[in-house]
Structure formats: C-alpha cells, structure tokens
Image (cartoon, rainbow, N blue to C red; front, side):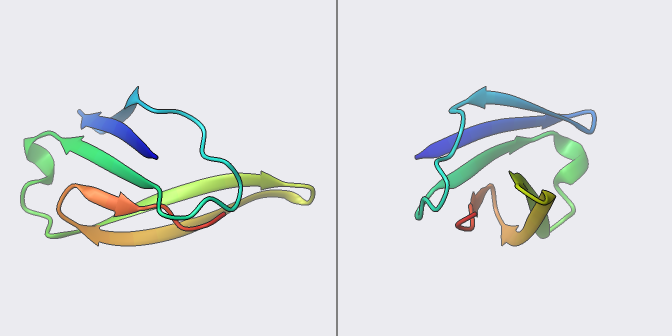
Length: 72
C-alpha cells in the first residue's frame, strides 16, 4: 500500500491513499515537495498512532521522495 502526500508552503495534504492497517509491513509514503525542500538531502517522516494509553509516534529518516512506513 502507498500513500501520497504533497508538501507545499509547509502544509502537508493527503493526495492519495488512506489508513494503514495496524502491523502492516511494506507500506510506503510518496511525497511531492515544493522547492523549499530541494536543499535537504535527508528528511524525516513522523508517523503518529493512537493506542489505549494515548498517542505515540515513530520517526523514519529517508532520502528522495519515498519513505517506508514502520510497522505501527
């Protein structure tokens, strides 16, 4: 499964895909960045998820435009 997100003027907009099932493996996010991001070789995606004890997050560093979504 792949989710697509466009980042423009520091605002992220979901452009394709949706929810990721818990524990899913091999899922990705493909980003389209505006020119502000072109100087950054390494980027970080933050994935937030809700559990019984509250919100948690996992960060994933990536290069290029595709980030692997960690199993949440």
